[in-house]
Amino acid sequence: MSKSKSIDKRKLPAYSIPEAAHYLNIPGSTLRSWVCGDHNMQSVIKLDDKNNYPVALSFLNLVEAYVLVSLTKDRKVRLQEVRKALTYVKNKFGYERPLIDQQFQTDGVYVFIEKYGQLINASEQGQIAMKSIIEEFLSRIDRDKHGLPIKLYPITYKSNKAKQPIVIDPNISFGRPILKGTGIPTSILADRFKAGDSFAELAEDYGRTSEEIEEAIRCELAA
Image (cartoon, rainbow, N blue to C red; front, side):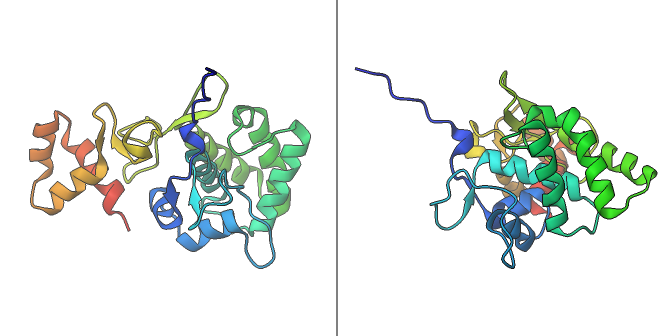
């Protein structure tokens, strides 16, 4: 008997638009326009499963949206302008999925900023600031030997460049955020907190710091 091909969980539809938007801390309407298009404009992110209804993002789609957040963070730029810059980078380097291509983290970022800067007439100082933002976001993605994302460390309330303490891994807890190193979903911690447990009590129970517990709960309860 021939062995069946293993399913790549990273490509399975796993996150509804409201859920993914919550993890990314962006409006659901923004994410929907990225994956479904808006006002006769094509989508920026192509869903791994286009036939799923209601619309659901895969883990790779979630990471693509996460990178897109880094590209547009604090910049009031129209979606079609971002699309132009991404298309330019894709054609220049031959990226199939430029938002998650490992090479984008090196050569692609510089070219994107150059093109993006022209589109928004950004100053050199602005481009340097943008590069710093993008690099921080990209540093929060772990990749396999082929360069594809395997883990995402989302930005949380007290975020810094360290990959902690929350991680999204498609192979653990159905891809829901967990407290790194425990496998405990952040939703469980949030439920216990809402039931009356303090940060200190939860930290003692799970052998983590109060700050890590606080970050995990903020990941679930942030507006």
